[in-house]
Amino acid sequence: MMAAKRVSSWPRVAERLAKLVPIDRLEPEVVQAAAAGRPARWVVAVSGGADSVALILLVWAHWPKQRGKLVAAHFNHRLRGAASAGDARFCAMVAKGLDIVFETAAWTDRPESVSEADARAARNRFLSQVRRKYLSASIWTGHQQDDVAETMLMRLSRGAGTTGLSAPRPVQDWGREGRRLRPLLGVSREELREALTEAKGRWREDGSNVQGEYFRNRVRRAVVPAWVEAAGRDAVQGAAWSRRLLAEDDAALEAWLDELAPVDCDGSLNLNVLKSRPVGVWRRALQRWLRGYAAFRGDLSRRGFEQLLKLAQAGETSRFSLGSEGFVRIRRGRLFFEKLSQ
Image (cartoon, rainbow, N blue to C red; front, side, top):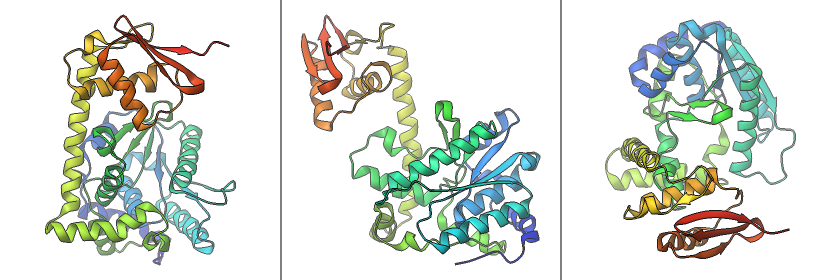
């Protein structure tokens, strides 16, 4: 576990790190978004690990006009006892050394059995609260190249499509929750640690990252090293490039669907405009309808979705049960939601 020597050294560490990781090594989309945004607070998520420490230092160094508007936000999951408390103290010290606002909170309503999803959701709620408190439009996170590869492998195991496999994205719009900015997706974990070490920076090591309790940790510890060795090349960098290409394809499909405009003003899905289109367009149109335009707010199994997709493509008059939610009806080239009669 590494800790800072002197609080007063952090500005110098940041300046040295910025020379080792110049702004042109950061994601261009993020740099453009930062330049285009209106002057406002930026919330920067800081865990105490190498990635997030590098993030807060690089944001501080590369955007000097924002230094007085930075908020370092640390969420204490309280999963590692005294080590978690040490992380919080360390992050507070970094923030103080950079003379920026520091916000922290501890997970007090933690469930007895904690999943990765639980921990992520709790952290996101905290970050959203901080964003709203400071009227910020952006939350910056330290996801880097290795996170891209791990996420891709995890989602491949669940059968994700282009939307899922192109995550995490450099700039992600969360609607009312603002946007997430991830400038380090093109920089590897090893490169960040080497640069931090050379800049004489410090960070905290999370011992749980090498344990196999969570899926991501198992992928990080056992799968990625074996994959890189089997590939005989930088497979992590290759995954990061694939993520970028998948994001481009995903955006192209979304644009195509926007042009088709299959969802009518009454909320029904116009099946006629989808005729002769590739199945991928049908799939995306139906997913969009279920997600954002229908009264349905439940969830479908993969098998259920595939059945509904086939019915939609057939276009024949039919009814598909959504359980207690109601029905999907297909009639006269339209697909629409029908609530159960009370």
